[in-house]
Length: 174
Image 1 (cartoon, rainbow, N blue to C red):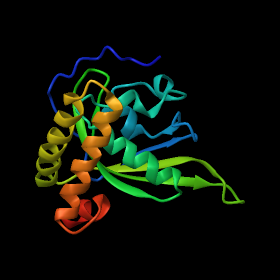
Image 2: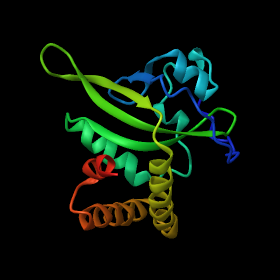
Image 3: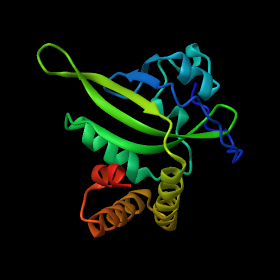
């Protein structure tokens, strides 16, 4: 039921700073659980989310290289923290600081992923919004989306390396 025809409104939505957005997915990224905060902020009903790819809330102004980094990290059985701009069903957006971890069974096989998202500080939103605009501009400059992601990832790596750290360290350094 993926809704690819949602137009961003450029209006920001907010959720209470004392709440967490929680979701779980299977290994392919299809949603298996959402909490009430996720349902409320996204504007979707729980039944519209379950079974759908988590990318149902992907905002078109999020650089693909960030999601590539996220997937590479969690598929290598490591956790990641990332700033993410998501899109509501009505086209509004909301920012989160996401903590995504693999879920393991008793034999240490990855069975899915778990994400907790909280309200980020506004100064961090401004910083990452600026960085993501640069990355997205690089991705859009290419007719081949793969080349765009590759060059965008290179810019991200250069940006964080200039600060003497990797992306996750950069997230926590600000």
